[in-house]
Image (cartoon, rainbow, N blue to C red; front, side, top):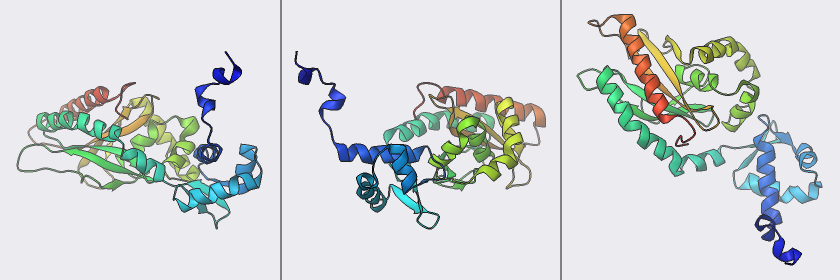
Amino acid sequence: MSDENQEAPADRYRAPALDKGLDILEVLADQARGLTRAEIVKAMGLSPSQIYRMLERLVARGYVTRIEGGDRYALTMRLYLLATRHPPLRRLVAQAQPLMDDFARDLRQSCHLVVPEQGTGIVVAQASPTGHWEFRARIGGQVGLFTTGSGLALLAFQKPERILQTLGLWGVSSAERQLRAVAAHLATVREQGARVEPSGQLVGVTDLSVPVFGPGNEAIAVLTCAYIEHPEVQRDESREHALAALKRLSAELSGPDAAI
């Protein structure tokens, strides 16, 4: 068999311009604070002329943006937004919704599912108890990563050694100071396997937040119950029961076969 026929399929159909564009995206994906053009050139081992037009086209198409006065380039959230339109997110919501409905009915508590998007967390699914009263998060509502139970739980269950890169992919740059401020809290949450704290937004509500793990054993989403006490039920017993049920729900959604 000739060398031409033995050529690997990956090398047989070359598209150099496309390869350069994908290489630029991959280089920037590892940099939470972006790179200058000179740094991109050095990382790729190419001449400036070889990447200039491709970089400008990525900016024009909205995949890359200029930051810090135009001297640095960073990924936008366009790739992430394309990914969230992909069926895996819809599969996660479809899988989670009936389980969340069961939780809300059985525990008489609302719960919601949060995923990272555009530098925040976004509520993508919600379940309410049956009855006259309810507290619920609005689907599509945004929550702060550093100021809410869901956001802090998302951060806590990322790999600490690469959390800055992960935040960069989520659209958050220059987060070192914010991470230092919550580092001890995140470590405690990881050790406990859940975050159980009074709500920072509503008096009398306790946030119970547990991670939904993806194939890489990092949180791809968080389930949160904004726990409200019922006067006829013993406080500690009921809250522990709700947390245990929420963890079981999370376990059903987590693992190597997680939807996203």
